[in-house]
Image 1 (cartoon, one colour):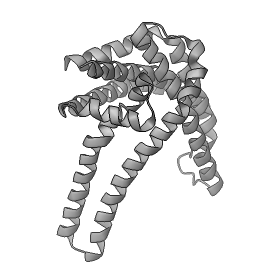
Image 2 (cartoon, one colour):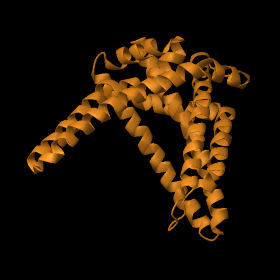
Image 3 (cartoon, helix red, strand yellow):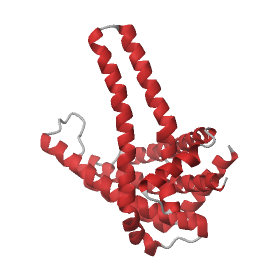
Image 4 (cartoon, one colour):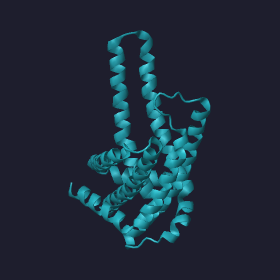
Length: 260
């Protein structure tokens, strides 16, 4: 538990000492939020096919660009954690250097999740024509077990694979193997990794709720359009800052496990 709390504490320190990197992510998130506003569906509004298609295309483009920012951020955080210095001048070169490998890594992880979800879905679907509630419930339970096992054995440990890739300068498959080895030997590390993730999410939710409540009170007296812009800006600031906190925390946790 001490290692997890230390990782989180140092993660906040990484963000505080790299405000330039935080600012880059804030601007990126802000641009994405503001550009996506025309695609947002207002209450009571039915989205047209054109709106849905535009929103989908924008989402794909945003995700593809975000991989570039992910690679650059991971590499700069690695530099700071290991050497105490992160040069923002390396942002573009780092983003380009790791882009294809992180893209391939993302595709493989999505494939693993997709296969597990497909197997679970087919298991439930196969029992539907029987119209037997007991059999269906058993199938649903089995599906939940399958997804849970895959999650603990693969998805949770593989959350460290980007850190393996960046810190070890590894290829996609090698990074996945390293991540699985580091996070699962012993298996209790998976539970610690899951706890780290849960604690960081709870911290993010707590900060978001407090700031969101205050901003909500302020935007309540504003025109709707202006309120949405303010909320988008504030949300981008929170996400940019906490993004580096989480990256720093996971980086420190990964390097700690690697040393052991």
